[in-house]
Amino acid sequence: MNKAPSDFPRQNSFSALSGAQPKLSVVKVDGRYYLEQPDEDEIYQRYDVCADLVEQLISYCKRKKQSTHSWEALLNAVALSLSQKPWGLTVEENAWIMKKLQAHFISGSSE
Image (cartoon, rainbow, N blue to C red; front, side, top):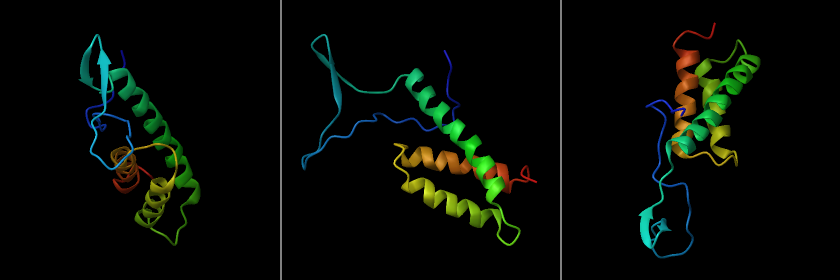
């Protein structure tokens, strides 16, 4: 079984429940209720999507980088754009992606 790295965000549940009253997402198994939590395979699938997106964004940033703009400015624009995409990523996953991009470009491995 593949396992996501320890720095990849893990959430208790990926469900959303509508309505004004507070709700708790549970599943019923053999007459008992359990908190719905993703297993390692589900977490790894989300990690795989995010890691692939990091690789795509590295290539994108290299193409878009202009000598008159800093890496920080470009990554700020990417972060804003990423937060507005309807891709179903969590805030924590977006932050993980941006952390990986910053480590790649700002830590000196981008040149």
